[in-house]
Amino acid sequence: MCPHDPACPSAEAPDREAARTLASHPEQGWSLLCNGVVLFEDTGELLPGGTAIAPHRPVVGAA
Image 1 (tube, rainbow, N blue to C red):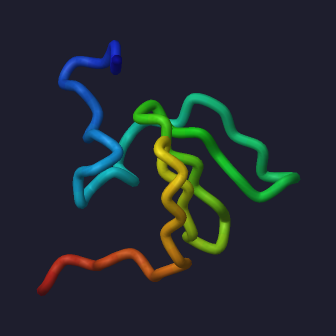
Image 2: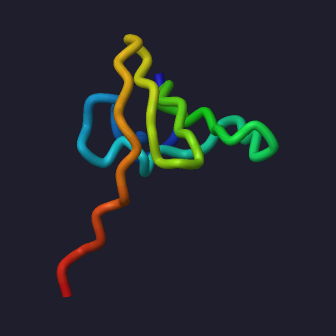
């Protein structure tokens, strides 16, 4: 599905937010990622199968 090389993470992968943005609508507060995930500005997500992920803060790597 993803035409990028290397391919973007799948919608089921823990790092799914790392996929490239296909469409961005900041005025509406959402972006569509290459893997089909809709990412909202409050960090909530809507997965392609309809599962909603509650808003969360991104995990920052341990120092």
